[in-house]
Image (cartoon, rainbow, N blue to C red; front, side, top):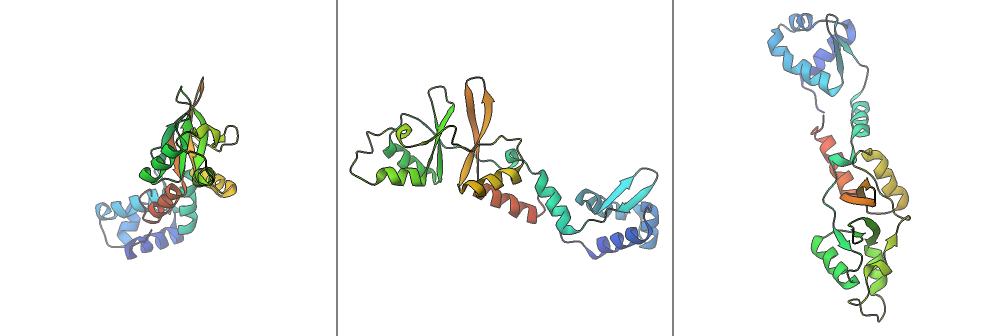
Length: 209
């Protein structure tokens, strides 16, 4: 985040004299405590300063990049997941291709009659199936999909950074976000490379700071 000149000066004062009270900081800047309060709140919430009752403010010693890293490590999948695109395992490959292009996604999740995850369809799966002379309207997706347990998935409570690492290691575009039920995994969302990129953009714009 970009700091104002006054906020930079506050940090310097706290570095040199901390712990120091808000009143003392205000006196040195020739400001009232009320005028200074928003700046101190911002610096404390952002992690540059810490405050202790009856003691005052002190400098945490963390740089801007370190604070951004800390924020990123706290992001959870549920904060950035998007709506999943799901089809029944008996849907035809042709219908799945149409669905994928209409929804403009790179991955479709496949469920059984109980609406529980059984497989995943990627663009590569559908492209591979479309090469040849077979009638795609008569081939169900469960014939060509990637099946459990060869599916990477996550929960809404998982750390975004860990799931992003999975996307990189598995070289995939996205994973289903699931909730464990007695009869299987229920798909409640999806986490894609686009979602991760959105998180980085929002972090850079301080929307989660």
